Image 1 (tube, protein in one colour):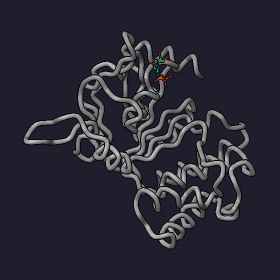
Image 2 (cartoon, helix red, strand yellow; image 1 turned 60 degrees about the horizontal axis):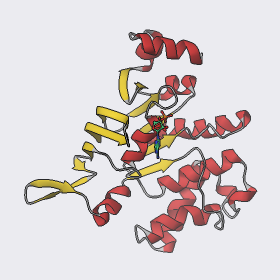
Image 3 (tube, protein in one colour; image 1 turned 120 degrees about the vertical axis):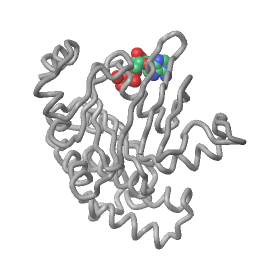
Length: 251
Ligand code: ADP
């Protein structure tokens, strides 16, 4: 579903992602863990086309995300192509980024109506179903300022899903939340894994959660995958010294 092929990304002289080769299969839940500054968020941002890459190609469902085929060659993608590809990827951030002047329902309906061209009726049905799924249907007419952080994050997840993305990205979605509401958000993500079989890529500091729900965990260090494996391999029997050090520090 997702493939990074020899991807490099730098900011000035700082190489943030180095020669990254990385695949996520359809229906797979992959967690990215690692120290601060190791490039985890940048990986998600390049996939969301919020950052341009310096080298390599990113593919989504076999189609190049950053390049398009033209006369048998790959050329850098234009804005129109990027806009279309972007709709196949949903992202939830640490800061929920809901539209403050819209209700929960309007937040969910906006993309499907404006970007996908759905009728208001279709968008409303789809959005209500998703707000129901995340346990927020009773709050559909509330504005974000009237919702708790956990509730806003659940609306943000419903809003991203309303676009029917092929891949969902979660960037530290529980980091800004009070401890007592983290569970309501992780439970929604757990539900997506067990009941919906979505392809997901998650950056998280919550090792227990990553261990619980991931098919695969990747440990990033210095813009590279230092080690990856199933949760029991990576957490239970890490091979690399850096992985061992990181895991013992975050315990
Ligand atoms: P992580 O998510 O693992 O904490 P990031 O992907 O956010 O790491 O950042 C990786 C490195 O890139 C860090 O050293 C960070 O300071 C740097 N960085 C991130 N965004 C920018 C930017 N817009 N301009 C310059 N440097 C950046």
